[in-house]
Amino acid sequence: MNASGNIDGMTAMVSMIPSEKLGVVILTNLDHSLLPVVLHYKLQDAFLGGKSRYWSAFAHELKDRLETAVKEAAAKQLKARLIGTSPSLKPESYAGEYEHKAFGKVTITQEEKGLSSGTGALWLPTSNTGTLILLS
Image (cartoon, rainbow, N blue to C red):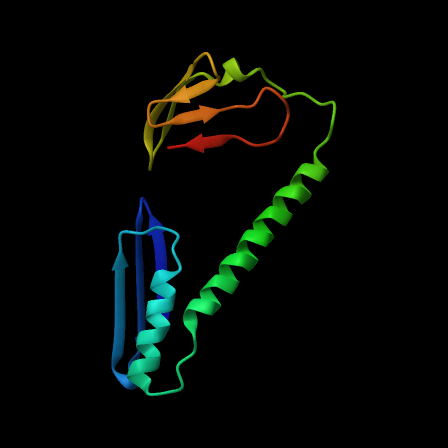
């Protein structure tokens, strides 16, 4: 069994094989890197004594497949866009103060380039793309 996650430039990966009394914890200051995956499987191979796979090649192939899937999904979304439409509300309509129980308060202000928040930039496009982009 294993669990992993990424946030703010960090990755954590934990796995356990109870029958072998083996636990592996990998903490890095890299986020969205496949290095912890490669290291995880390499350590398990070494401990369990089985034939070791060339995990770096696996990681590169996985990275390439993921990048291709992301590009294909973006192209599919762009193709599905309705041309000649416009947003229901003008971007400045979203300016104001918002509050969420878990995330607290955020103030969205109208800036020269678009909408902005205190934690980064929130840009609402002037055309109807159906997406909001939050850059932190």
